[in-house]
Length: 360
Image (tube, rainbow, N blue to C red):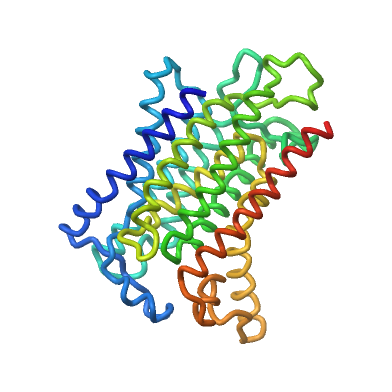
């Protein structure tokens, strides 16, 4: 557990102290946020606010994780490296998107095909490698079985290993795309996505530690009462680093934000959420733990679908938080109430996770 504390603490310090330094660098280079003209008019005052703050979140997470290795004498596990690869890879795609927006002063960054290609390349590499690297017990970082609080009996490899690999790649990339877009859509108000991410990755810190303490590798009990995950401690260490990084960043990202995370941060956090849900065997449970993200995405889907079908809108503006903005709610009020809703979803998800363990 020492590694968890070191990782989270170092990431917090790096993020808290490193963010203002990064803000000064961005201001010096005039790298400010471009505000879309069809958004809420109150957002026009945010034009020019430094963006790409996700660079700090990623750097703080990686540094916190790296410092924990020599301090505790650990050797990096395959699951840790894969999760960091997915987080950094998605962050790089987001960085390119942000940089193009800033350098060309427009709301469109990477072309849709360019973003899909970048995310797809990172997602496919992650998916293929996640089914490699068996340990002494024959466990790989991920599995082809669909999972809720643990792997279910529904295995994508039911028709053979080859088909199972293809189906897993499709399934994993669906999750990666869904979660990156979910966090990206949520990142529309000061501190909203950062705060929700704190709740969600805090939950995964608990899940990973619980899986580590109840791991089948050293608990000679019924399989249903322990967890078959490859590297739960390593995943807990990274979850702690992300929580620390988000805490430090939120100090500067809260209203009125002095910096935005941009696509760099939202894609990185979304990728990390997808990755940790796959590696902890909680793919479906993640939709409950990250329920606020899901609600935001669903509101956007409803708005687009209903408008195309009827020519009318369900919400004044999508995603959902902008609807409440246009309804007269203050930005801080919306953010705090959405954090409360996010906390309720997290509590429900952790309650289901713990209840399943008690029943088993």
